[in-house]
Length: 467
View 1: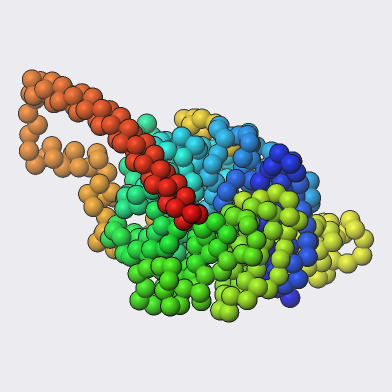
View 2 (view 1 turned 90 degrees about the vertical axis):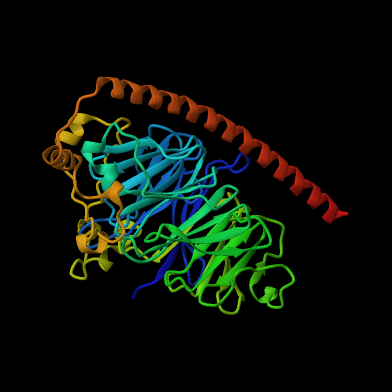
């Protein structure tokens, strides 16, 4: 019988020490399994389910050092510890378990292949801290959000393209309608480019974006700054968190804002009865329950339809960093559940242990991009049907190679050599680079000034409200 479990990653603290990854029974709230010695980052716990052929894993980067902890469902001990190029602030694994991506505090993105550990891309994706990374369901795109208030969408096929190595990757599209740091992200169902992207920000809005048109679809406003977001799988409703309360928005209704004082606000808000912050949100597998991970180390479970409190999970120590709801792994706990894999294996512990599938190979992640690694390695990736993509790909992402374009141009028109004109263009390019650097510096100064002004206004508003 299939059952649901909740995987909760906790952060480290000065009081309780390092956190861990805990597995709870979703129905009773009882603890089933624990992986100790992990101080996870926000939204950075990746879960790979087990099959009859391959045993799944849990991978979580550490918040206090450049290390990735990899655990197996089959044992409590650490399966492997991988040294990373930098300390990560964001992490995700692709749905097909082929690639993993990491983001850093200075806006850099790394892309690795899991089985070999080969580093395929390393580039500056944002100006500031990357808060979350997420692939779409077919691993066609990688989406990144940042404190620089932008949302970037990267084509995975271009990041893997060997011919483009050495060039700064160009995003498929960039969304810049947010005015303050973007804190959470969700990529909806559908193959590229039919999926929708949901983002929540400190500017008190959730924005819904279209990949096909590369534009904003809708904006939902809320009364306060938003730190966490959860969207159900069928994209019928979403929840956002702010301090110790969450707001619900039904996506099938005509709703453009949710303001304090609305007639049905009380039906759309869940407020915790204690003073703590909600650090992460997640739906259950069936989307009938919403899980609230809190700063005080507890997980509150609420019914989606009635908003009735169902149960509390957790040890009440370290703050929750991430929550995932999954079907219980068939090899959870190792030999104790090996009979769930093979009904024919009975008897001794050794026989039961032999029924466990081999653990998913997770290579040592390389720190640099090596030509020899790429030359001796090939990657297969599904890029979609050409007839579907012809309508929305512009010339920048045309499948025709640069060599073919140059050859066609040479055949149609003779190339004229003009050294003087080339020299002039190079000079203009250099001047443009200098001007761009100046503009970036001015932009940074303006950004800092705006943030300081908003902080002062927020403090003044809070003081007036307290009075």
